[in-house]
Length: 216
Image (tube, rainbow, N blue to C red; front, side):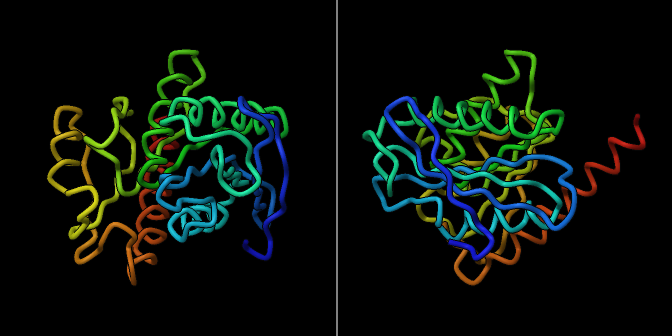
C-alpha cells in the first residue's frame, strides 16, 4: 500500500469491498478509478501496474480510487467472471460521484481490469453520463469480450506481451480505428518499463485536455 493511501470499505454486490483512495497535492481536477488484473492469477489493487496508474493520475491532479475485486484481500464474495466485478466498479463510481460531485470521472484498468472498465464505460455512456476518458493497459483483447471503447481512449501495450499478444490488440482496435501505443521490449507486466506508462499516459492526457480546451 502506498504511504499516502487511505483504506475504506464499501458495500458491494457480494458483501463488503475493500478499497484504497489517494489524493492529489492540490484541489482535485477529477476522479480516476483503477481496476486491477485477474484475481484468479494473483491480481490485486496493489499490482505494480495498477499502482503505476494510480500514481500517474494522482500526478495529473486526480483523486484515485481502487478496490480489490471479489474474493481478493478483505473483499467478500467469489470471482464472477467480470460481471459482478463490473457491477462493483459501478458501485465505486456512484460512491465517488457522490463524494466528489461535479468532477469528471476517468476509468483505467490493466489486463482483466480493461474488460471491467470497457464494460463500465459502455454502461455509463448508455446512461448518458460517459466517463471523461478511458486508459487501458495490457488490453485483454480476445481473452474477454471487451466492449467497444470511445475514439479518444488511450491504449498502451507491451511489444513482447506473451499473455495478450500485440496482434490480438491490433485486431480488436483496428475496426474501431483506435491507435495502440506500443512500448518496445515490454512484457505483459511492463518489467523495467513501468516508467513509460506514466510518461505516455501523462503526455497523451495533457495533450487531449489541451485539444478539448482549444475546441471549446
